[in-house]
Image (cartoon, rainbow, N blue to C red):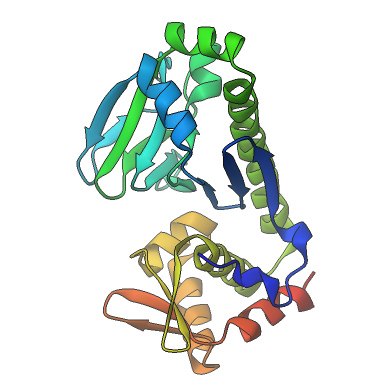
Length: 247
């Protein structure tokens, strides 16, 4: 996927950390890595292939983590309980090492996760991950970078919630979606990931009514469109101009 942020968005809006054989892409809402054959081989040697059907739970908030998961296919939604409905914290896409920090240190999981679509992963037990971290600097660095990306993303989400308007945050989410899931179709960018207005509301902690109004305004400005169950960014420069003007 081409990096559409090349148009006008400063590089400081995204963080890229490099490891041998992989690129870790970090955004406030999506954590996605390039799949590395080397990492797959190393994790397969000590782990177990697992599959989850759409909407199936993977880990539950409050459990003590005993394993981590290297995601090789599909998207996982990370949620946390609130006084109202669960809030969506992140989307974990392919290449992410999920639950590693909590598994390594026997920590209680502060979130739940479920398969947004059919998901495939390599499950590695805590007692098996430590030896390859000790002996393999690539694995060690990869695990550290995954943890760092999660920390940076959490901080970025909090900063944006406190310092930016609802319209800016919605545009920021769509800009993230474009970079990870965007496909060019007839001069537009199709976000090849189905999600609803309620999903946007849960992800950004913005009321659904406000989300509906802001999305309608962006459609009227010919920046976004919704067809066939998918969102399209019809004017990427206009969307990113909104981000630049409120920096």
